[in-house]
Length: 132
Image (cartoon, rainbow, N blue to C red; front, side, top):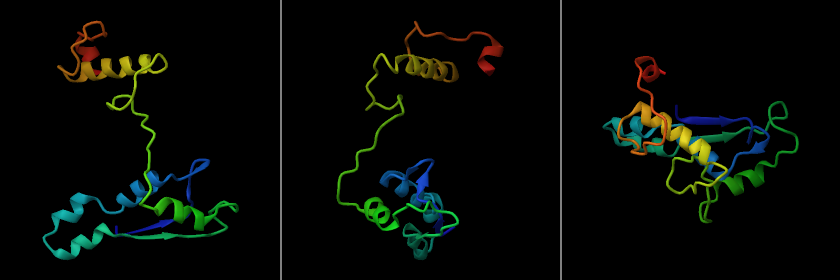
């Protein structure tokens, strides 16, 4: 796949953020596909064709495609992603997300030994528990 046809600039009720838009473009050609070919022409896949189709049939009537392209493709300003994955080091564990964090660590601990040495977190010990 070397091109992307985008019929809507929204994800759910909100427009795609610059990070989401760039991530979507990056999915057009995976790096493994680009660098698996020995030919130099495969490097061109790093620059896929992106077509934003302004159609009344698919796109919201109040969508402003010009503003979206200007905002989503601008690369000189700093883009601050909101980090929501609590397993990443940049996320501060607070009272609001501590329960979710401990549940995820407990699951990971049960999937892979050595993930976490905190013995206060529950561990499964039965064959059935290890399968779940």
